[in-house]
Length: 302
Image 1 (cartoon, rainbow, N blue to C red):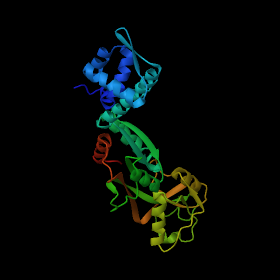
Image 2 (tube, one colour; image 1 turned 45 degrees about the vertical axis):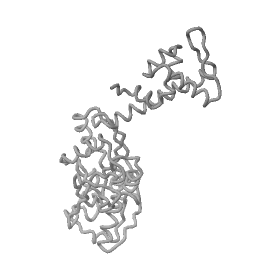
Image 3 (cartoon, rainbow, N blue to C red; image 1 turned 90 degrees about the vertical axis):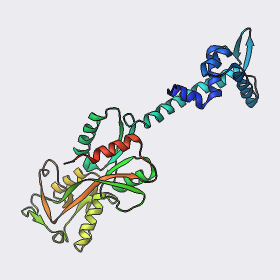
Image 4 (tube, rainbow, N blue to C red; image 1 turned 60 degrees about the vertical axis):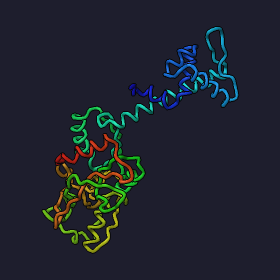
């Protein structure tokens, strides 16, 4: 069986395919053979299209048939529709192939420096036909994107837990540290308790970001409410603000060591955030997205 996108499109729009074939061949027998139907059926289809449109679509010229002006207009539209259907069929076939599909993958800004690029590099080495669209958004925005179906998988933290709308798969843990300026009074401390930070000036990511929620909860557990003097969207910006002496921040330990001008103090007790993949329970993952998720879960992300 011919399962090409062109054949699928023709089967989905058979009468339009016939009209397009008549335009190309100028012969009803050849047009009928092209789309795989008997000539009497082709004659009935043309008559039915003409009746529906209320205009003559073909005229005979000897042994040939020619499209009328109305027929040409409809045939050109049919050709465009068949091409579009062929493109759609190709995408549908691709989506069903775990080695050729498309994955929309969202992840935290803090994952973009090394973790996600290395994860994608290794996956693509094994599955080079899978294409990705990448987005970086705040935690709450990513959850909404998964919920709406605009994103297949999100790499985020904190995981949504027992929420029935989401399927979660823990992937790794990041240790969180207190980042302070080199001249700060905590800079000489290897470990710092959050309770000591009461009254300190904080810098943080904006509300809705996963790190902001974690920081708010740590401060609340220590008996105070954090009111950051500066809020940013990028973790690197927050680190820069700390280096400039504008406050302290709770952040993941930097992969390449503390940013110059800052010191990273362990929290007491030590604190980690769990990072994992989130997908929707409302709709199944495409084969390619499912393969990427399953493959990622076999990895040990440092």
